[in-house]
Image (cartoon, rainbow, N blue to C red; front, side):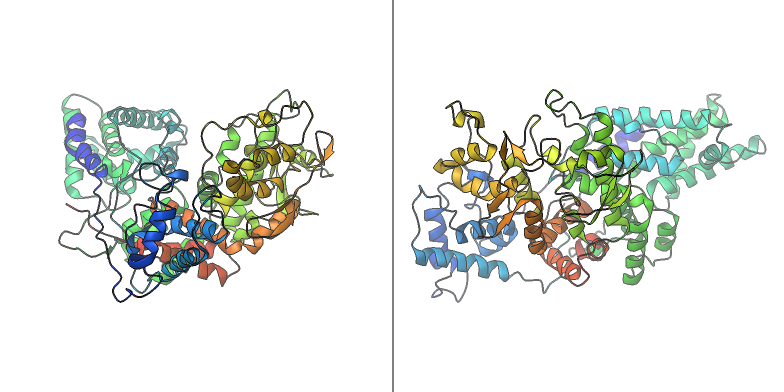
Length: 637
């Protein structure tokens, strides 16, 4: 019965989740602009084709940038992040590279003027398009937290599941979370283990057993009644909405067959619970279609509750959310904002701190990064844990206490224990457990100058200036340099005169090559600002016996010196940083990559943040009230 249940129910749903349909884009002309020097059709497309497309095309997309794919303004707006980067490098003279054919000053200004005007003409007068839905499987974190909410058991069963695939930097996006036949068997085995554990704890934790199996039947006639009540209660919580009577009838068919085979009431009820936990309505977040509608429409109250809870908690809605959904109140603006703020302040929002910031800022990788133990014998697992705790607690404070997102760049507090305080050279008695500490200077505080991040962005035995600079330019400011060309020689091979050189000297020699200069000009100054932190994040004043020069000038002409100067630069660019955070948080919330019209949501969130000291909860509220978060479309047949 269970096998046929899967074949008849799971496979069709899973197949639907893997269907992707590409929409053809029809080229648009620019009526009335035939005499405009900034007309795409008349002037600008020819400039792009002549000076850009030779390197940035479909077959050879230098730096993973393909400008040949955009034949009209609508497509340019769809790929606006690419064109924002193009505007930046053209304005600063970084592109075309020095060894390529150069446009005249007039052509360069036409190109700059066109891109700037086109990007500024983003039309947000109409509601943002929520896009077409995808079926989202629970990833490993969500599965374990959902089982814990459903049963009260913290079993971490998903640790044995295959790793979840990632897209756009996150591992819970519908487009990459497929469901293979081997996984179906794993889910079945996991469900059996959950039921067995509930039965095993029947005497030691009877409240969990009763929560799943129900009260002890009064007599044989009462057994089926109790089994049906247990199935309906369990399935309603598992499916995150009231369960249909037809489904309960299916489950009771399983129960009756088990009893006909002389299985006990407990065994037969266990089959019902297992069936619920291998149902697609449990494993997949499937939303209901509204046949005949071609325009976007609001998700129903229970779907909104599920979207909200998995965004903020990575787990199912609690009773309060479900009660509001049942009363049709959750979608009211004031209630939705109130619940969003309540959930952010709840300890369960730790999941957002760990899973969003942990992936966007790569902080999860601190768990597996391995410094060279010969070079750094003082590094140990206790210190690693202290580094991770510092970042987890910092990000949790930003989420739960509604701190400004600027604290990720520069906070006047952090979380230390004795081990990490000694690593930072901070005197005092801090104890074994991390606690909140007010900082005396700005060399620490925030993520940028933390031991966890500076270690992650280093090689095992030494610092890595380009990697650190690339992270700041790309991950924090949203303007990553292109990837390096193939066959780049090791840095040590740049100079073979036998003299000891600082990393800055080696990189100066490396970037003297024309093919390397433009990218390193964008990365290296930012990376040099962090050179006082060694490969395990300790402060140092010298490199190879010579004083460290942590000064730099970025491509816009901004000069800075050391980590404090870098923090000041990033704070001056708080709008760029906040917009980058918002884009990533929107991807995380929607479970998909961004579309052209999503930029309107980004700008709305940024305006809300600007009006409230860039506080995190204000950004999250703006996202949960947005059209893409609250609406959906029917999938294309």
